[in-house]
Length: 193
View 1 (tube, rainbow, N blue to C red):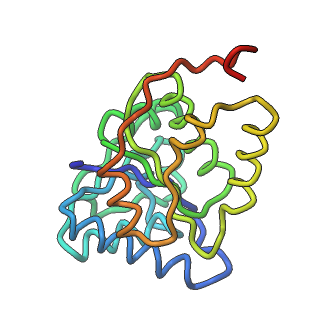
View 2: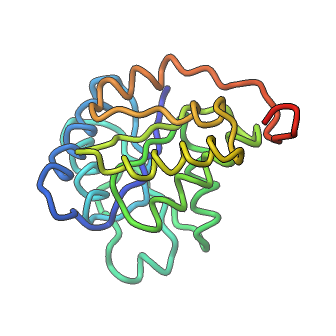
């Protein structure tokens, strides 16, 4: 893996552990010689991980829509900043630039980006590993709900297993390096349910 896209909050959250783990993930990425692709901002967890990678002499590529740049949140010291017109172009560009995805704590935008990339993987549009850095159990309820999708017949176990989870950045990176995408069709039928 040369680069990983990290989706995370433009806020720091209510617990210092989120920022500390963003900084730690940045260090782990550089230790593994993996570049960061992210949303291009200099605020919140986004800024924390970008600054951590830069401080450790790693590559940081931001992808930011023009309308967010105008709100003066663009990071000014990145290896490269791509400016795009729409949020959809942003996700496409981030996908093109990276070999995997990690979701850290965040809000609606983080979840939307994460689930779009996960859906693309489920549909076979890419075979990249997709991880959740589950800091202090932040994603526990979401993971339980995804298990409910499986239990109620709306999601296959093999697709649930596409989500790699750890609360430790090093462990998550190792899981991502070892990942093999499933070779199954997306559709659930009465026979496969």
